[in-house]
Length: 168
Length: 168
DNA sequence: CTTGGAATGTCAACAAGGCTGACATAATGT
DNA sequence: ACATTATGTCAGCCTTGTTGACATTCCAAG
View (cartoon, each protein chain N blue to C red):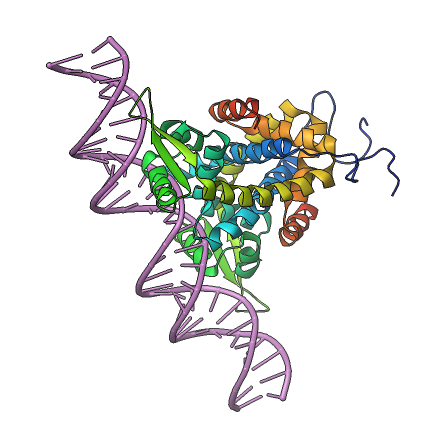
């Protein structure tokens, strides 16, 4: 596996040509389109967008989470998130309960309907991910996750790891 | 196909729990933020957005490409792309030359200034990718690419592979 | 040569979803 | 009492996507 043919993948020093990096960059760009394609279709039918999906996903992951916490995970402004949350609450997909200890806080939950949409969306996205994982094999999956984790910002990685621990 | 060694493409060998898939999904979401963060900062300083980056990237990759080709790679409407291209041409980053065989076609090229911005953007993005690749190791890189390629839509994968062959 | 269609450009209008700034309210903590 | 925090809301702006309509230019087929 040393210097035999192919692009220099170098074992010890790991030479990375611009060409290899470029392929990684383009792979990331094109793959992200596929990654969002299925949910996007479902969302479009119901008049929602990716922003709604993100909110629904993370409320589902951490039921009872506060608005502030959601803000820091999503990395958007409260005005932007509020617009999305308001729609979801008006449509009865999300409900907010005033905190018991701290009554300023709103704790967010998915309603039955909300959970149903969440399932529809994540089923589609998991199906795509499952296909990719199966096709690529278990070693590839582990490499995939390693590279992605190394690509995150430090702050972002914190959120990711906190969520990773709290396995559903 | 025999079930011996190699990437197990069979289902029997590869159990994928919803939890594993969820981690992959969240990794993809958070990593994409890191992936775009550096270019986004540079672009914001100059009053451009991701759409400009994408146009610049693919014009650089295929100098002389036509508007129509760019449209199909980017998957947006001509009106949307046109707005971006117009800005870039007004600012002297991109120039379009009328086709010699088919004079309806516009062939797109980066000017010196355009190439300079392209380099700045891709340097930043490559740096991030290089860091992630180094940290994860060569095997992870290969897995990363395999999973991403398997995640693309068929149409998208066509574009990706066509670009991959034409190494810069 | 005429005509259909392709490639492109352009105008207008609209929507999602980011952003900032400003302000209100309520509750908490010092 | 007072400053701070958490949240909501209004107004306005930007980018980037969308549709629809229409003009132009040019190639190619009849």
